[in-house]
Image (cartoon, rainbow, N blue to C red; front, side, top):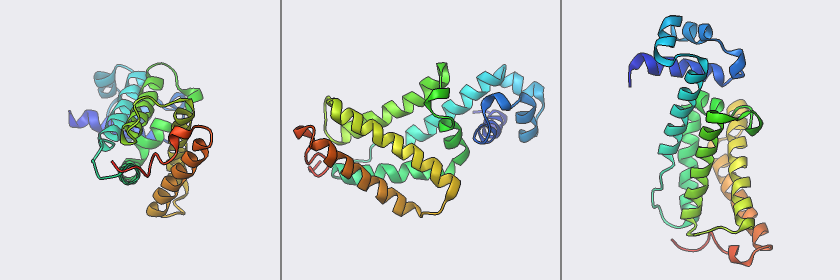
Length: 198
């Protein structure tokens, strides 16, 4: 990818991570990247195109980190996946924050599709790690709730950084186990799902 285009997207992500897209102008992005307005328009055509391209880039980078590593049982794989997820959060804080900032209420059109696409792929990855072909409503709700918790934890960690990463990752794995235990009382098929060997 063209280096200048990457620099413009990085500048945009940094701005979008702290301000609503409506409050960021092409001039802001150009100034942050040390470029001209004309260059931004040359690559992106307008702010919406830049916003979508920047978010798509962040989403693709995150998804590439989440490919399964076949590390053993589902719980180990979950912990390994979380570590890679938080590697991305730490290394690409602006991209992560821009991707998730504002929550689903503000996500429509292409932007909503990008954010939902990341969530869908994360859901399918966890489902595959658990060896579940078709999750029932209780498991589906449980997994989607946990993914929302992980996103919120990532944003909270970036804002406060008052808990060390290994502790946070372990906390989230423990939360998944607790959620599955609660879910198992409503659906017997869920019992022992994460403890089962790969």
